[in-house]
Amino acid sequence: MNEDNVRTQMRKGILEFCVLLLLSRERAYPSDILNRLKAAKLIVVEGTLYALLNRLRKEGHLTYEWEESTMGPPRKYYMITPEGMALLEVMKNEWRQISASIDCFLPSDESNA
Image (tube, rainbow, N blue to C red; front, side, top):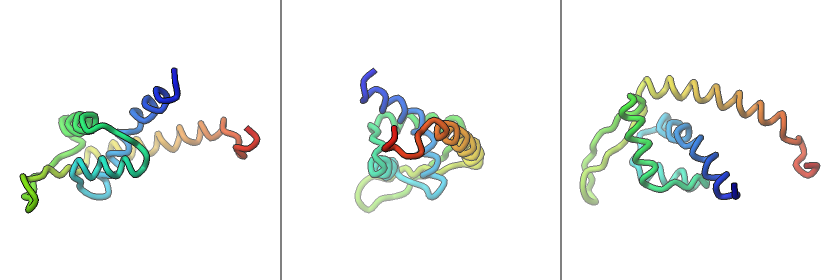
């Protein structure tokens, strides 16, 4: 597996977590979510994000509301639901446990690696 494939697979695994984290802070329009993910160097194609948002909505973790825009058609803003917040808490706990486990294998000083 080449470096790009490794990066892609690892990022897919954390994309849902990152989207829920973003939406736990404030509602967001999909292009805003994409921009924030890109700023964090988590490059995601638009179709992947829309599929994820739709799945999370169907599962009851997200909801949305339409808002009129002065710059064009109405915009769909996504928000996390109480069920989504509960899922996010589970993900946070799992992330902390996984991160702590992986840290056990990483050298404390990367220059000694």
